[in-house]
Image (cartoon, rainbow, N blue to C red):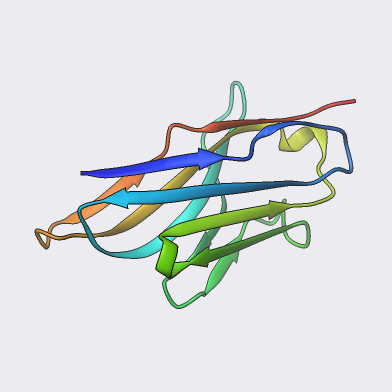
Length: 120
């Protein structure tokens, strides 16, 4: 089984910064894509940023220039550095990981979510 544990959410003022972390553990052979998604009240879950094993990154237009996704393959950890936060960034942020179990079956797993609130 695969577990994803997120941390780093919280309350921050507009213009502030937060760094989210997500550690992936379990019976894993390898992790391909890792990403961060968010879901605001009344809205659908949307991609914020993703990163492949070889460090190719993708960003939502709404966060380009303000967020940076990175990963440490040795630690099975993905990070999201968020700067210049805006009230519109308020949401529950979810970590996602896709890869292969040590049984050679694929997995696509989610974390439990961490709340980010941007407010003065």
